[in-house]
Length: 122
Length: 106
Image (spheres, rainbow over the protein chains, first blue to last red):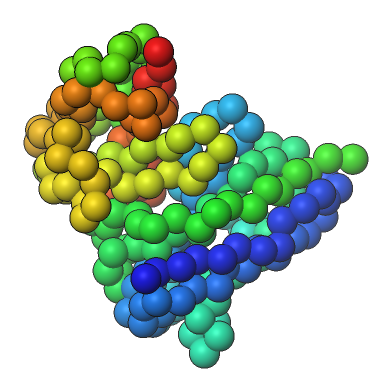
């Protein structure tokens, strides 16, 4: 059974940094792309970033490009999201999600991690 | 970016009702349309992928149809556990984009 266990959220001041982690199990990690999706309080879903199975190629939403970095620790079976220069509008529940193939094209997202809350506030 | 528009944004229903939610893309996305269910306080869950394929473990009362720009999610015989918010998502191009959600409530 696929399982995604997230950690690393919390309260951070504007301009600060935070790193989210997502420990994966139950599948061959390098064979699947992974994504991050966020949800601001009371709002809908927003795709943030995706990375290919091997970790060689990453994609970002315009809203986080240049501030967030996604990476894969293949040997640790762990997905990371390094978030720098955080803004109030980055406040959201962040979900780690498994894609259905090694690339990031034409994918569906399943399953989803439990989510981790990031709050950016002074 | 491809814009996804869902309707209705919310609907009041009753147990046993048939519910239809529509999703429209701002350009053709072939069949690359997925549906998710999100119960309050929970992570989203995949229901249907590629417009009409039911994900393993999802009850058969859920069905999806459509191609190009217009898609529908149908719930035939609403059960108590189906009261939730439903999102469509296009996977035709990057960035993948979601509809605004449709909240199904009593």
